[in-house]
Length: 378
Image 1: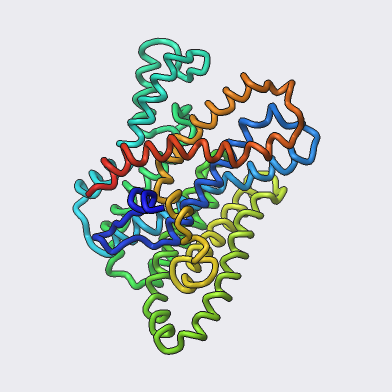
Image 2: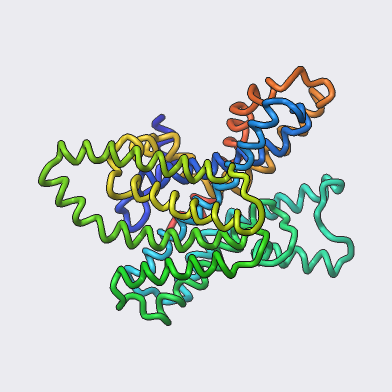
């Protein structure tokens, strides 16, 4: 435990430390993403008409919202850091590039090497010119915002992250938002969120940009409530402990609502708008409970458990490498136990946690050797 503590605990933001539950929320988000890819790759071993297939489909659907939770947390962190103090744009952008690119480049190069070793799995378009243009577009994080197939499957979300990094300082600076009252900024972000839900292109992941707005509203809500909460705790600790636990049930209900709404059979663009709106509110409430008002309740403490936080600290490395590790694990499984020889659906459940554990090994290596050394040392 001492070794894990030394290597996987982080202290950022000028040495003031992290919000423990935030790292745990990142751990939850990345585990949800793992579930989506585990279900996708395990399908050949699961009977299409069985109960396991039905449950697996639900896990796949629910797992997709891990990225949405990441976006809410990013909205909170980046917007909050920029609102608190004015930062020169180029140094700020340099820090954001340094945060994303070392790990991305390492995985990008690994994918290129594997593309040459396993040409049957290659996504590179034929022809020197198209291949070079496609690789450059991937390196510049354009898949996601544009209809470009990503080399790294999950890297589409980095397009949205980087777009947010570029636009939020412009919004704050040009709009003079530091001079606005908090409630005015909240109304602006809510209006932007509603407007985007209505005007966003149909299909794809464009609606998910609303999660960044939810994160900005979350920052304003936490900033407004923090002083009052501290005063209330100082005045009446026992009653606040009770309130913390009651708040935890609100957060748990919000988490259930955010996950459960994805399972609603609401077709078309209007259904997608409804689900996105529910997730934005639900994940905002969940984060509010765990990071501010009732952080000392049982839910906040659950997300502050050390292994969950360690996974959250390494979540970026895990996010980029886990799909490749899973693919390798299932390739080995297909060689040892082809789908036609599978003994039954129980294999899906038997391998869930071992395969998750297997993905932790390359993620930990990437985190310790690349991310922590090159991105988190400021």
